[in-house]
Every structure is written in C-alpha cells, then in structure tokens.
Image (cartoon, rainbow, N blue to C red; front, top):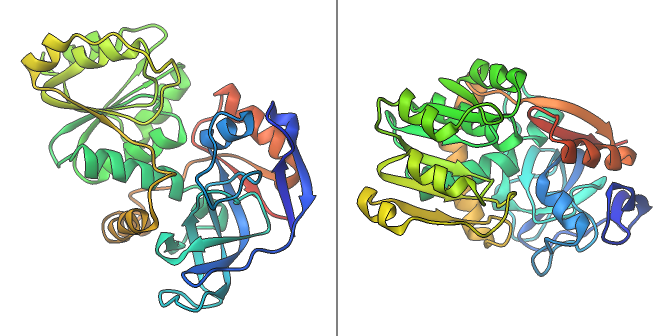
Length: 327
C-alpha cells in the first residue's frame, strides 16, 4: 500500500511517500480501505518528535482519524462486516491506503456525508465529547467558552454544544474567523488580538462568567480563564500551545470553587474510546444526520501532498478541518 511516513523528526518536508505492507487486523480489529484521513495538530507534534504514539501503534505513519470501507474483520469482530462504510478514531497509521482500527472505535459514516466529511469527525468529536460533556459535565442551559473557535476542535465544540442546548462563546484571531464561528452557532466570538477575552466574557454574562472553558492554549491564558469562569466553573485543558507553565491564583480557585482538569485521548485504552463512540452514536450522530451539525472542511490534499497539509495546519490560517484524500 501507499503511505506517508515520517523520515526523521523535523518540518513538513520530512513527510515522504512510501510503500508498506498492508496491515493485518487483530481479532478485535477491522481492516479499512481508507478513502480519506483527517489532519490534526497531534500529527504535527508527532512529526516534530514531541508526541510519541502509544505502544503498539504506528511509530512513523501519522494519522488519527480515517473514513473508508471495511475490507476485512478480525476473528472476534461482531459489530461490522466487509463492505460497511465507517469512520474511525485510531492511535496512528491513518496516512495510508489501508489501516486497522479497533471495532469499538468505528462509527458509521453519517447518512448524507461524504467520506471526506466523515474523515474530519472522529478525532475532534471524540475529544470534545470526552472533555466537555463527560469530564466537565456541560448541561443544557449552561455556558461554554472555547478557545481557538475556528480550529477543528472549535468548530466541533460550537456545533455540539449549541445543538445540545448550551450557550457558546469563542475566541478567534481574525474578524473573518469570528464571523464564521458565529455563523456556526457561537453567541459571540471574541477577537483575542484586539480584545481581552476575560473582560468581554464578564460583560457578556452580566458579571457571572461562563460555566466551562475548553482551553488548548495554556500558559498566560490561565489567569484570564480563571477570571472568566463562574462560581463552580470548570477549566478543561487539552493542549498547552502557549506553554505548560502558568501562574494560578489559588485563592481565586477556592473562592469560586473552580475545578481544573484536563486529559489527552490518544493513550487511553480501547474500552474508554469505545464508550465515547457509543455516546456519540446515541447523542450526536442523529444531530449530524438531521443537519444540525455539519463537517467544516477547509482544504483537501492528495496523500502525496501531506507536507502541504501540515504547512497549512502550522500556519493556523485554516478554518475547520484539513483532510488527505487517498489516490
């Protein structure tokens, strides 16, 4: 099969087209003939050598989400059969014509969606559901602030939270990105380059603050996050793009009864990810098929242009998802 490999840690140019044997599914896995594969920031970190994949997953083939057709199944698989159209969350190996995925981490391609659109869903939707709804417990009527509202995570979080009955605020870096976020359902998008988001949130919420903040920034955003949270608010961290060290006013945490938590998804076990898949299928997939949530695709590239896809990802000029299409 054709695949893209990381030749050595470095910039986008270290991504090279290569030939590899087609993988063989283990008893609980399915073999997927990949039609499209999503590109995500963890792929960039893996390419740079700063985010090693978990044991047992592909070391030099990036890619955390795919959509395609089941070609073969392992001996213990009961949920799928050859010919089924699926999208899947995987721990690596998605930049290839074939990949394997645990059966519980696969979901049906939503009715009416293309393979490219379906490939853009798993990594971000699993991440948002796990952190915003499971870990932070967002409920209808509560409020959510999402940093990086125009990112893949951002466009998923806006639509999921809005469709499930919450008020959503976001930050973004340009007027156009703010406009798109509001079109997707954000009540207000704040331009973090020209506005203090904490001050804006306090004003927008009549002094109360928001119930939950989904933060992929870290660093010096942390004090502002604490200021923008309501009493009993929850700060959920999923990345630290501005650094892992932060100044925290612990007295403010105590006075507001703030809970600070976070997670990474890639290293969690199959059972954990399968449980998220079941929740998504029950609560979110019907909303997609009803048209309340849509895939937001910024750009597609053929597999052999994976380096261009990574360059666009690093530029942060995109809105929504970047997807590789197989030959």
